[in-house]
Length: 257
Ligand SMILES: Cc1cc2nc3c(=O)[nH]c(=O)nc-3n(C[C@H](O)[C@H](O)[C@H](O)COP(=O)(O)O)c2cc1C
Ligand code: SF4
Ligand code: SF4
Image 1: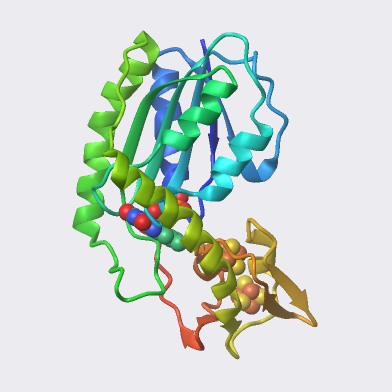
Image 2: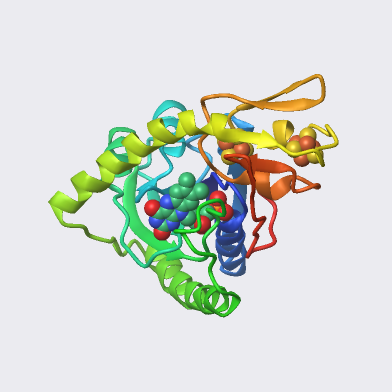
């Protein structure tokens, strides 16, 4: 049996979960192939038996960029492959997976397992969205381990385990996801850099949507930011400013992405 894991991770939390799932599947003799949507690798829909999708939750909705990728690049499959979709987040609230389920259905996949996974807040630039305490992160990770075992069993045995959401709330989350994604793209221009920037260009190289261009060794920010926080967290000089104020760098989970 083979599983294909496709994900987007701004700062590493989602990638941590993807790796965890992959390790658990390998222990059950299921081989795994892991790809980020940023690789844009062609997908052979008939080369795997299970599909696992994961991304963070932004503005109470799965990352819109990720949904667009699934819509545009996931090929139709002939075997009605079972799918697990999860979102990493801070809060303990359910996620609206309705849109992703419709897209998967059109492409002949069966969404069997959905899960919202609280880990830690990576939104480091606004004080109203507080940093998750280390003990809480530890607790979340322990819970994730035990819950994931159960969900993987469901996926492998074809047993459905899906989150549900009231129709009105699902409409609200759909609207907030798309609205705030559009709005915040413009707020990307509020980023700038401090004197400590050495012009290394790492932020521009790492930005998943090409929102940063180096201009005479100075990063220039455009209006297509998805607010993933990666540039702030990966700058070796902590030189990125938001609204001309320095930003906290925070990485609860030390993992690649
Ligand atoms: C722009 C933005 C919006 C976010 N919105 C929410 C949210 O609505 N609810 C929530 O619980 N967490 C929210 N978060 C927190 C992230 O979902 C969470 O930290 C996630 O695990 C980050 O995953 P990553 O490290 O793979 O990028 C938001 C983070 C960002 C950057
Ligand atoms: S990563 Fe930091 S130091 Fe390097 S160019 Fe970007 S802002 Fe400057
Ligand atoms: S500019 Fe920074 S926060 Fe915006 S998308 Fe690029 S890496 Fe993410």
